[in-house]
Image (cartoon, rainbow, N blue to C red):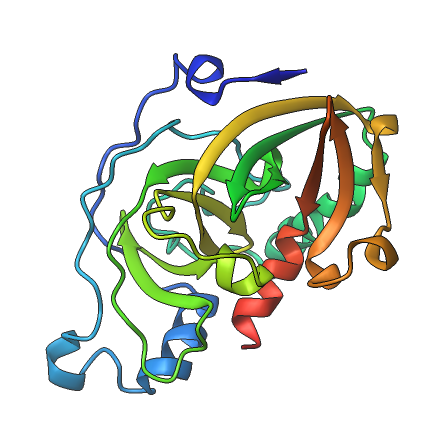
Length: 251
């Protein structure tokens, strides 16, 4: 079954803007890679983007895996700053382990919900459990020496978010005017924006209807495709969010 995202999430509330917070370890490593270790002091931090005015299409979609109980507060997984009072290392490792196993768990799930979208005429999707929200396209701050598929970064409510051109990454036609939406995905302490042409639908499918381990069948960018779902006459390629993050962090 497929449902229009606007109707499915019509009761969702757009997230409020928040003041920028401290960079997470992954954000800092990413910024140092492209802006240098002194990125905060260079030209007064002029290379970093200012908070963007965001137009959310869906509002928040999913919460992060629940963290175990701990004696100190655990950082929330929302879009605001992650920096909080110290978290016990064991709790942090358990939280990370929960996210590490999420993609594998989705393959065993009885039911799967996916955010569907289109890029270069292709039908694609990502698991809704790994999507924070969908926003309208923003102008990105360019990064020196970044590969073509990394369009730059934006400041989303205090979080540094690299924007990934899905057309460039997947070798699909980059049609003018198609980059209209950003699907914001979450992985540990970092967000990643997938720049896409159109938001298609919210697919709800039985786990048995998804074919996993299809690398040999999909050809180009096989390492990014986790599975296939047949929806009527359409064949929807399910992307691996974990692989997308690895692609960005190791580019």
